[in-house]
Image 1: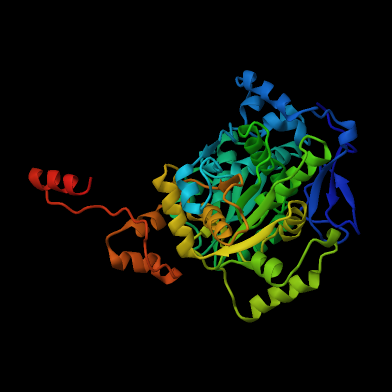
Image 2: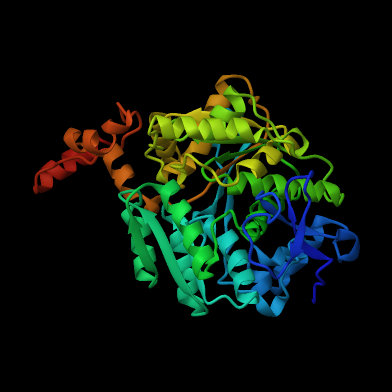
Length: 467
């Protein structure tokens, strides 16, 4: 399907600007006002399904790569690339799992909690949903190198797509000491050029934008509007798994705010197209050690305001961070970000979805993570922020026990096994070294190994005592 430039294009997010750009340009900001860009469509001139149920027909054609992909089988809802240019490695084969055990922990009625497990993606996190879209756009415009700053998951995903396709080189920027070995090992193993700079993710993000502009390297961080087009499909799959019924709540961790921004855009477009009759409420959960969104939205009261955002308030907040030399700090490394690049889009998503923003401690995150694991779906710490947040929202009466809730688990358990092992360890010194410095005082749901002599009777006795 050939798409004309007036059917799909890039548009400045700010209504007061509204500048538009060709779909074939690689841009991460508006050239007029430096605002964020959307991928926009003239839906009146594009073939749109009359019902979401039409996508179920794709299941019978799963031998075709685009129908197998959990992103590209929804191509009609992100039609910016011709099918022959799409790069897919089977991403999006993910699971929406009901969990009554975790529901009880959160405070929800049985049958009301679902965990959207994005750890089943090829690189082990939700990033593959967006990477296939951004990588496809890069391929479409002839890019030879692609770059990102990363706390780990983006780098793993970019390196994987480069390694599988051999279409371009991956250039990855990471901060010093700000990446787990589980994620770093992926980037190195997949052959990426990895640059470790002094500083944190925000420093790496600043530098990768400068370098990409100077050297003409395609940037795939979520400031890239095509990344978010792919991430919209997480919500399509949630609806698909719920037989196209809209849940009451979507709860998602908040880091660079790409997912929450993409989810808001997905529901905004589906409502505009008449494919859903209502949108769910959105809850974005910050880690307390990286809580920019919570501070600006809930404490300072900043809002979308029809796109007329008080940018001065944001600038003042960041200047205060700089003045105090404040750095993000949380065990949930994937959301350890103080300057979320999609802040403006996230405000729009919160407006569209009547959203709320809450923060949770590392203690609450790790306790929730242990409960997710105990009921069969291991996840990385950042993922568990959604479950910890849902528990807090239930305890405060914001979410009712009878409401249907979907928590997004963004990454696989093995992305950050160090935190998991430390939580369950019998070695108090090891616990204190890894978790104590983060304010984690206890492991309420620890499943500790039982030390036993290499003796048959002792082993049998230990099993009987602990069964």
